[in-house]
Amino acid sequence: MDELNTVTAGETQIDLLRHGEPVGGPRYRGQLDDVLSETGWQQMWRTVEGMSEWQQIVTSPLLRCSSFAVALGERLHLPVHEEPRFREVGFGEWEGRTRIELEKIDPGQVTRFLQDPVNSRPPGAEPLEEFTGRVQAGFDDLLCRFTGQSVLVVAHAGVIRAIMAYVLEVPPARMYRIHVANAGLSRIRTDRDRQFYLVKHGLV
Image (cartoon, rainbow, N blue to C red; front, side):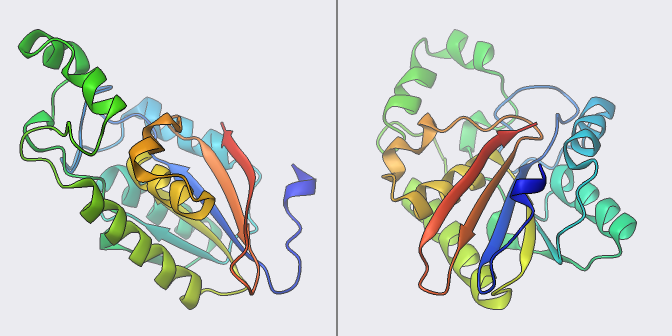
């Protein structure tokens, strides 16, 4: 990965790292504050092994992200900043449920959501426009605060999708077409003119 570690003067580099597997396995967790499983910790450490080029770490406040961010910050002697706007989207009545459970309740509802996340949201879910708006605001503030630096963001699949859709100008209604694996790492760079480049996606 040496070719990825050189940042041109004036560029800001943002690495987006999704949390590993939480206790309880795959489910629509949303803003439930589950911790990482032992497997999740192993996934995270494996992904960042040998990487140390960051100058700042920014994390969602939810424990499945922040616990690892703090541990990594201590290991690398880096400051860790919590960004409340990077918490996962609220899934309303879906929170804590698996896809199998949801399909038993209402067959096809998950597919309808993935195909039309604007109009087929879970009951009580955070509106997509509000979610992407807060993530974008947090990301813009991050870019202003840490211009010219290399930053690791530890966050959730939804947050990473929202950031990638924003910088690549993908309509939010299509952002669920972006796959984000547990402990997957994506890299974005931007210059002084806010031209964005996706360098890598989904490194595990």
